[in-house]
Image: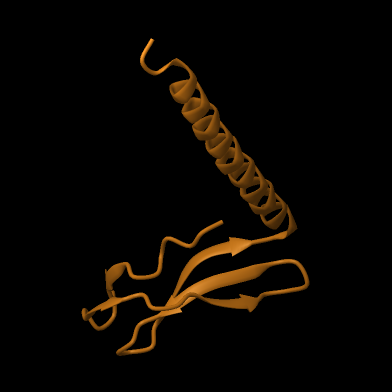
Length: 91
């Protein structure tokens, strides 16, 4: 699953300065849960973006697999459409 947070511009609630999120950081909370967050570049306040556990990681893997399958089907359809275009063009 691609990360859409980086390059987002945010305003810090504490210091009021605007900055772009350059990198999300990840920290294990316990054996199962990860916390993903970013830090204000100016005052160092931490902002939690999301938490992931085993269930979420499993679902993200499923989504990634489905996205790959989707991309393969799209490519296959493009190839079939090109074959059809070549076969029937000019009729």
